[in-house]
Length: 208
Image (cartoon, rainbow, N blue to C red; front, top):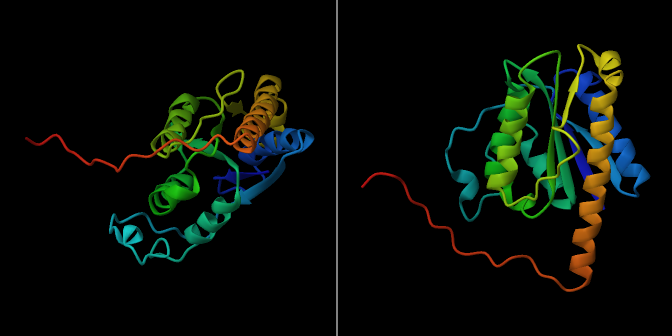
């Protein structure tokens, strides 16, 4: 079993990396393969709601800047942890743009796979950013993995983040909880428990 831990920070080895590394180390201790996945460093095109990714012959998003490559990796993963620094009480623009397109174009790659969000900040805005990331899971039929506290780490740099004893413990607990849920899902699958039956989506709006 494998978990992708996505680093949504423009700093490859900053606070977000420190937090994700703690989760990854615990996953490995629990016998789960963990890969920290860094997002593309180049410019990302925001979703334009063109809808072409949902056409029958679509191979993914029409923009070729790393999102489709990630969707291919996501299809092979069993769980996800999406990490972000807090920018203006929100997840980073980098990971927001990336996840908007990845979940819109590749939602099937995430369905019924456990997901967790991790946020890192110097002082404020962590709860709002954490809530923002969790919304991707709840629209994609993903079980949300919790810890012993909200998944946040405090520090102005990686060294300070590693000194956040409660935050680092929260990351280790998250890793153990993710590993436990993945093993439970595998046990259910081995016992012949199928995925829930899906109804055909009904799309409505509030105009009468």
